[in-house]
Structures are given as C-alpha cells and as structure tokens.
Amino acid sequence: MDEGDNITRRRALLAGGGTLLFGGGVAYAASRSGSNEQAYVPSNFHASEETTGFGVELAGRPIAGEPDAPVDVYYWTDYLCPFCKEFETETLPDIGTDYVEPGDVRLVFLAYPNIGEYSLPAAVWSRCVWDQVVDSDPAAYWHWHESAFDAQSDSGGDWADEETFTGITEQTANVERSSVDDCRENRGDAVQESIDVDLETGRSAGLQGTPGFVLYNREADVAGKMVGAHPYENFANAIEQIRNA
Amino acid sequence: MSGGADTDGRTDTDGRTDTDGRTDGRRWIRDVGDAVAYPLTSNGRLLVAAIATAVTYAVLVLSSFPQFSLQLLANDPADLPYAVATLTREAYLTTGWLGLALLTAYALLTGVAVTNAVTLVRRARRRSASTVVGVVPGLLAAGCASCGAGVLGTLGFVGAMAALPFDGNLLRVGGILLLLFFLGRAGDPRTCAIE
Image 1 (tube, rainbow over the protein chains, first blue to last red):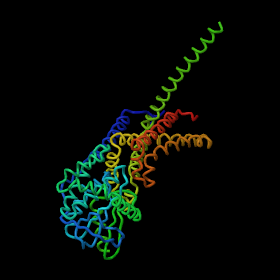
Image 2 (image 1 turned 45 degrees about the horizontal axis):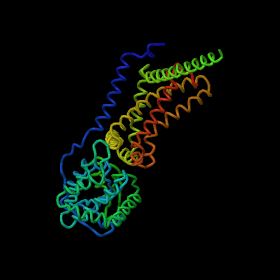
Image 3 (image 1 turned 180 degrees about the horizontal axis):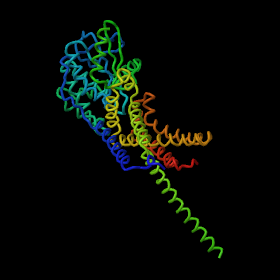
Image 4 (image 1 turned 135 degrees about the horizontal axis):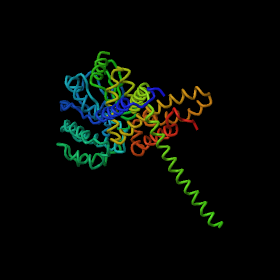
C-alpha cells in the first residue's frame, strides 16, 4: 500500500475540520434572523368590488396602495409559511417604500393555505379582521397581519391554533374580537369560498407554493410570475419590466 | 444421558447464536467505521466525498421548493448561495434542529457512499460485468435514500414533508438507515467481497 492509501493525521484533521465547518455553516444559515428591522406600515389601503383583468376577484381582499397604481402585485400567502415571513420581513418593507408608497404598485393580499392544518382557519381569521376594520381603521389590519407572522415559532414547532389567533386579535388595537368571531361563525362558509377562489386563481397562474406572486400591468394586460422569497433586486427588476411592458 | 446431551446441545446452540449475533453486530459496526474512514485514504477521495456532500446537500435543500430554486437560478446562477441559505433557514423553521441535523447527516453519508461506490464500481468493472450488476442494488439503495427527502418537494408538494409523520423526519431516518446499511454491507471497498 503506498503512502497515498494511508489515513494520515493531516487528512483526518482536514476531514474533521471540514465536517465541523459544514455543520457550522448549516447551523449559521438556519439560525440567522432577519436583519431588516425597519417597520413599514402602508399609508394607504383600499377595498374594491372589481375583478381585475388578470381574473383576480378583489372583493373582501385587503389591498395596499393607490387604486390607480399601474402595476398590481398579487401576493398569495399562508400565515404558517416561514418563507412568507422571510418575504414580509426582509423584502416587503423595501417594495412598500420604493413602489407602493409612490403609487407605482398596489399590493393585493390573497390566501393560499397549503402548509398546515391551521392554514385555512388562519386565512379566515385574516379575512374577517379585514372585513371588520376596512372602513374604520384599515391600518389595524396590517398590525394584525404582522403580529400573526411574528407569532410564527422560531423552532419549527406547532404554534398556530385558536388560542394564538384569539390572542393576536385581542391584542391588536382597533380590532374588535366579537365582530371577528361573528364573521367567522356566521359568514365563515362564504369566506372559505372566497379563499377557494384565491387558491384556484393561484393554481391557474401556475403557483405550487407560497409565497407566490403575479405582477400585472393593468393597462398593457401583461403579467409575470414569481415564486418564493426572492431578493429585493429581483422584485425591483421584475416590477420595472412589467411596468415598462 | 440423552437428555443431558440435548441440554448441552441447546446450550451450545444458544451460546453460538448469541456469540454470532454479537460478532455480526460488531463486525457490521466495524465495517461501517471502515467505510466511513475510506475517503480519508487519499486526497482525491476526500475531495470526491466533500464535493458529493456539498452537491447532495444543495440538491436536497433546493428540491424542497423547486419552483423557487429553478426561477432564482435561471435568473442568476450566482444566487445559488442565497437560495441554499434561505432554504436552509426554511428547512430549520419547518422541521427544527432535528430535521436539519438529519439532512446534514444524510448529505455527509451520501458523500462517503458515493466515494466508496466509485471504488466498488471501478473494482467490479475490472473483475467482470456480472460483479457490476451485484453493486447496482447497493448504489440504487443509496441513491433512493438520498433523494427521499427531496422527492416530494420535486413533485410540487411543498407542504407534503410537513404533513408526513414527524414532519418527514421519519423518511430521513429511513434514508440514513438505508445508507448505513449500504456502507456496513460494503465495508472498506478495498477489502470488500461482494456478497
């Protein structure tokens, strides 16, 4: 056996070090938390009863931005989806500041419950909260929405249940729990039907998971699809492309 | 007398079974140890193991959300580190430390298995074509074990792993056991007699 076939101390150390480095790298990537601490609250929300040129029904869906913004961003989300939280904390504040606030983009929140058992009930909570605050204080919806994503467990455990969402609803200013409960109990079926419509629209657009996006130029009737928590630059490029289409 | 002989026989048989069982277990563990140490026997093999580990990890993680991975990499292949890092975080948030540890162990063992399989195939090719056929089931087992965790994602069911028992960790443990079985069966590929 030549020297090259022996287990040398150097190689053993190299392999051990490499394995530790690999494990450490994975642990680092897993544990890094969002660095984007900027708080963003859309300054303008509105409701609409229309169905857009792309075929998205807007009735009952939260919409941020100006009603006449040239580009629609349809955002399919799930409160149980960690990847959606990544988008909400890392990228959405920049998109909001650079495109929603100046009136270039309006953001439509659509439901795509797909991660866990409580995904659908969480989507119903969200719609009922929006329904309750849309006329009085639409920004309250945003605070509720943020709190729901904040509540996501950092350890991958089960966190989403009736108790958690009741707590979030009670703690969000200007959201009246009794009205939300009334909506869930008495109009829950209708809300679920509208969520099914969102799901079907998303699937027709070719989305297989969350977060999913369709960017739509309302005047030119041109659309583009994006899937997952892309870096901000990718969103900015895609918005520019669709706007100039 | 005959009763005594019978008793002796049973005792002997039991004794041998126990000893053989322990010996088999010990031999298997020793073979796994030899197999895992094999990539350390040359710089080239160590490099092959490292590359196979990295590629396996990347493929496993990226295939947990293939639509996103393909779109991101088609847009700019330089985004590969971003995709792997983001989906690693996603894997941790979905399955916790245990799931991530199993995924890492999976990738490391696949790296070793690929290195050993390359040697096995080379040796088998030198002997005869029929020996190559003997190696193939082991390779397939290792291959399937490696793809197991990602295959559901590839099919487009992003939430499928979460819906499986223990968030899919059972599937990962199964894959790791399959890999260990393959490694223990082959042992050090230089001394291995393919059974």
